[in-house]
Structure formats: structure tokens, C-alpha cells
Image 1 (cartoon, helix red, strand yellow):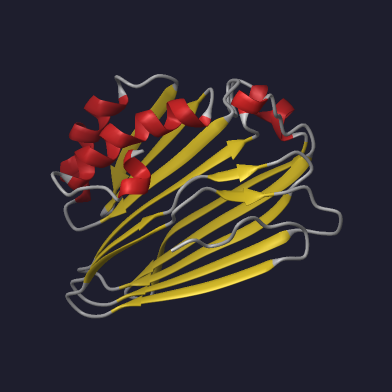
Image 2: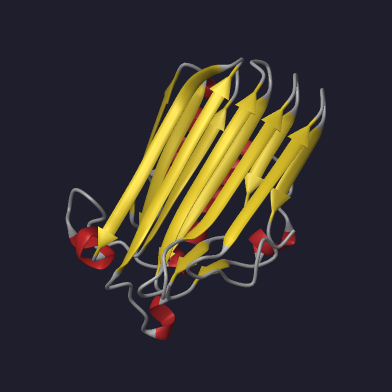
Amino acid sequence: MNTAGGLTGGDRLNQEFDWGEQSRGMVTTLAAEKIYRSTGGPAYVTTKLRIAADADVEWLPQETILFDRSDLDRTLDVEMCGDATFLAVEVIIFGRTAMGETMTTGRLLDRWRIRRNGQLIYVDSLRLEGSPQAMLELPAVGNGARAIATLLLVAQDASARLEALRAVADRVLGRSAASSWNGLLLARFLAADGAALHQNLLPALAALRGERALPSAWRN
């Protein structure tokens, strides 16, 4: 699927996906999602995923590119059964460095909420407002990165895959870290640009997915 050709202030995108018992499926996109300069408030993207028992689900959209003076308010809500498996990745690029673009002014609010058997097990909120570029320069925030990614696995055997992921993450360019607890595995990646981050994510995804082929849009 392709979510949109590009969003700007005032646009609203609401999407919902359901997986039945013992189903298996992936959602990806054919191209990057572009968030253009806003002249009036944020663009809203709301995603709801419902995952039934023993389902195996992958949420693997292409990257989101934020243009200068863009404003994005995005929410991902997941309701899943305890024996289901959920793998998600989100990539955010702050300006296309190959085009000489930067995001000197803008706003990003990105929220994740995941519930397993009705219990809230994961909450993540990222907010950058004012000058995202200046904030990303700070060592404790982005250390100069222009592209960031979150990789999350919710599975009964999540902790067993941690060392394989760390072995890959230790070899990538930029910065990365991974940890696991309570049936979750989380990794963060920072890179100088989107191309470098994409190359870092490919072996990380392979470490978690085994021999399953990625969609063609991810391999290009």
C-alpha cells in the first residue's frame, strides 16, 4: 500500500488493520511518506492495528521524510493477543541531505501505544519542536544524526533474539543500541542520512526475520 503522496498541515490520515487468528501478514509502503511545509497546523496520521491470537504481523513502512517547517502529529495504537508476534520499524529522516535540505524549523510528535491482552506494555513518545536540527546536534539527543529509526519486536521469544541483533548493531555505521524485557525487544538507530540508516536496518531486520524475504521496496 501507499499511504499518501505527501501530507501537509490540516491533512488527516486514519488507517486501521485487523489480523485474524493464526494469520500472517505484512504492511509496507511503495515509497517514502513525505511531510511538507505546513501553513496551518499539523498533519495527523492515526494508525490502529488489531492482532488476534497466534497471528504473525509485520509493520514495515518506508521512511517518513520531514521537510523544513513541517508539522506532524502521528499515533500508532496496537491491540494484540499474548501469543501473537508483532514486528515494527519506523524511520524518520529530517531533510534529504543529498538534496541539501535541512529541517531547521518544525514540529514532530510521534506516539506509540501497545497493549497485550488489554494491558499496556509499551509507551513511547517523541517530541521535537522549534529547531529539530539544533536538537539533533546535541550528544544526548541525536549526536548530529539526520535519520533515526525504532525497531520493536513483541514476541514470546523476543529475549532469545537479542544477542543476534546486538551482534549486527555493533557493526553498523552511526549509533545503535538494543535491549529486551518482558517479551519485548527494542533497538534504536542513528545515522547521518537516510541511505546509511537504510543499510543499517537491512541486517538488523534479517537478524530478527531469518530467511523471510523483505518486500522489493525495502531491498532497493
